[in-house]
Each structure stands twice: as structure tokens, then as C-alpha cells.
Length: 199
Image (cartoon, rainbow, N blue to C red; front, side, top):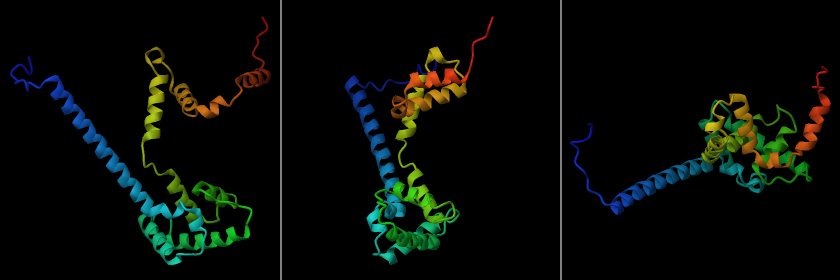
């Protein structure tokens, strides 16, 4: 048989456990280091968009211009750095006229920009969208796969792709699903379609 001539390493159970644990800790350390490196890289590029109070104040215009030029060179197919800088300056002036608007997160700023239309501040919008959609962690993806494993077990192995996708979405967005009144939804659906067949 294959492997019969191989010599046994003769590790005790304790030594084997130590070997496995050390390799697991080393892998965890490597993964955490890689994730923190990607977080630092994202912060060096788009970190200025996270602090709304600093972004909308009139200080540090030279450093802001340099950062925008750097982002424009890194993402040259998506946005123009100098135009992004001028859009931030224009957004500051617009924000001063709207004293009723309070911005605390980049998502608030993106919603503020979107309400003015598609052609207003396009480079700043793209920068905010990149910041808000870049995945620095894979936890949400892992959560989706763990939910998928709970939904698609061996008794449901013949489920179609459309139903599986809908059930996975309902499971991942559980807080929204819990707020839905299913009795009312069923009554609305039943009233909309007459499904009884007269025999």
C-alpha cells in the first residue's frame, strides 16, 4: 500500500497538538497582519473622507489637494484628483449655505450629494463610493457562506438556484425580515390573486 514504507515521526499527542496549534496561530497572525496592512492602505488613501468635520472645514487645503492628486493617480480611470479637490471646495461652500444639514459619516455626505442629481460632484461621489464599498475584511462573505450552509443541507439538496438565493438573502438580512408582518403580507397577496378554481 502507498505509504507503508514511510517512517513514523513518533510524535506524542501533546507534540502533535502543539504543532497544530502553532501552525494555526501563525496563520491567524499572517491573516491579521494582511488585513491591517489593507486597512492602513485604505486609510492613507481615503482616510480624509472619514472625518466630516475636518473635511468640511477650511483648514489644510494644500494637504487635501495633495491627497486628492494622489488618489487621482491611483484611481485614474475612475476619478480626476484635481476635479475632486475643486468639488470638495464647492461642496464646502454648499454645505455652509445649508445650516440645517448635519453630516457625521461618509454615507451621510454621499446621500447629501446624491439628492442634487447625477451630474453634481461626480468625482467626490465616486471617491465616497469607493471608500464605502472597498472590502477590507471578508467577514460579511464568510457570514453569507455560513448562512448558505445552514440553508442548503442534505435534505434540501435539490433546491433551485433562485429559491436558494432568496432564502439566503432573507437569512442574511434577518433584522429586516423580523420587522415584516407576514400575516398582513399573506392577506394582501391572497386578496390580489383569486386562485380558487370552480369545479
